[in-house]
Image (tube, rainbow, N blue to C red; front, side, top):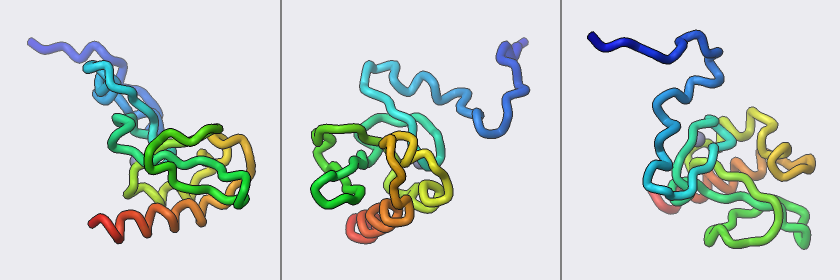
Length: 110
Ligand SMILES: [Zn+2]
């Protein structure tokens, strides 16, 4: 018989069981700041703080310098409701503004 070896008493927020082998092919994996699920970098949008404009911008090439955070393009709403982005970028950011960036992104690509 199959035995469930993992303890099933995780709090709801940490239910990522089963997702922790996403990086088995050695692709970089990051945690989405919105839903907290882990995903390949390629599936996520990188957000960085642009000090020249004083706003969060989308790093389409995932190459901009500085602290960044990753989020699913569809997780803008979740992002706006959490403070994860500010923690990731180490500054008080306008998560609503970042969510709007994501919304625009999904509008144009989907
Ligand atoms: Zn997400």
